[in-house]
Length: 281
Image 1 (cartoon, helix red, strand yellow):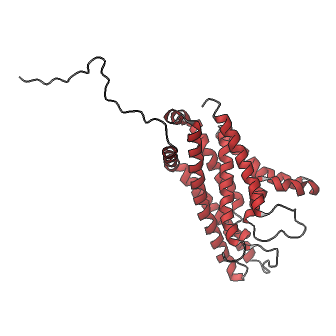
Image 2: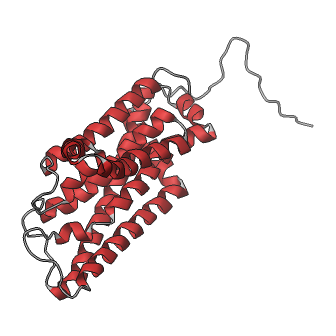
Image 3: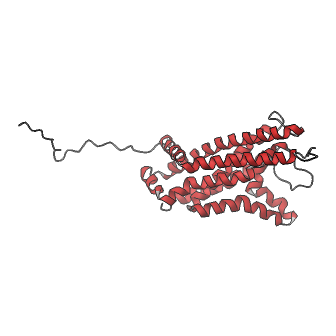
């Protein structure tokens, strides 16, 4: 009877194992992070919730002014801002997603697996931040345009609407998407800094929402200076077309005010990255 034998490896001769992939490239890390973000259900549900809330609140705000016996007009009336009113709530929703993108890996322990696969922390966190920013901006851009067009359609019956071709309108609509994206990046930085979902979401709500409310209780003289540096108030100038009405608290222009919000986001992100490169996972 013929028998077959499997040759055994000779001592001292290595097996033909897959070679090490070597240093992970940024492009490879970026593809990996895009895959991870897309594969999580919370990403889709959070973005859908943001779309519904921003568009829905904008529609309600537009319907509210359109149903008045004497709809507002004049130099202080800003139909673009009215249709984008839902961004005030949308900033919190995109903030939750920004936190979850990084804090969920700490909550499940997946961060250790991620760092084992890609031990180059700078490359990994940069890829994750870029992937989230791109996804957030695309979703925010779709949401902002949808809210604008629906709101203007509701207000057009009373001739209080505007169009994208009007001065400053296109900048304001795109600015709404930039505003949401910057809020998401700020939340991402806080999530990486605190590494705990509940704590990071609490910090996001406090910084973007609670501080905005508390500022109103300050003396008027203080508000004139503090409002310029509050993240949500400063960033909100970018999706405002009309100049502030007489007597309103003075603020920087649209782009300088947006730079203030970006400064907050950069401060949170840079601080978090510096700590991330030093402390254990």
